[in-house]
Image 1 (tube, rainbow, N blue to C red):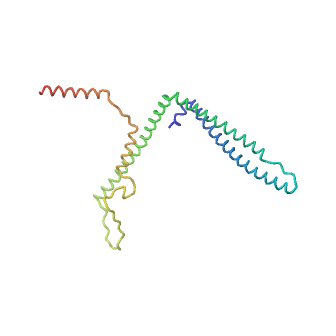
Image 2 (image 1 turned 180 degrees about the vertical axis):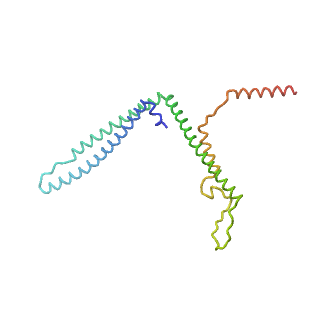
Image 3 (image 1 turned 90 degrees about the vertical axis):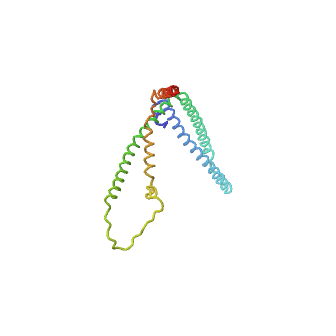
Length: 222
């Protein structure tokens, strides 16, 4: 959810962009350094073999390719190390910003969380309305079938296959899906995410008054 509030904090957005950019550059530099290291090892083997063949044939050994590749490899490793240190510094800067603006960021996160809860609750409310309408149509169809059953056709054909269901037949074991209660319960819970809990200001005072009245009433009766 932190991504949702970064755009409201320009400095944090800049720090995040710097970290992401350095992470990408460091990954590319590390891959290049590893590839050059492999090439240096291969070039060394090739140079040694070519030199051995040339000397045995009485010829001058060819120029070696390993030194130039090794120089490139050392430069690539150095670039990768510098980027690694730059990345560590950028991550530290981001950490200090988060620590210095903790309350502000926490407040924005709470607002984003509340807004997301309202969005989920709204979507769940629509889904719950549609689900209850679906269940009502299903119940009405069953009631109609019970009051006006389909006429039974005369049995003039051969025997048909029969499926036996052991135990109570429910939505879960008949269709393989969740039960109506679990669906309604889940959606009702999601709907409740967008409903704030309101505590009335005079609730505690009313409770204390009732207790005092009961005590006074008991003394009068005695």
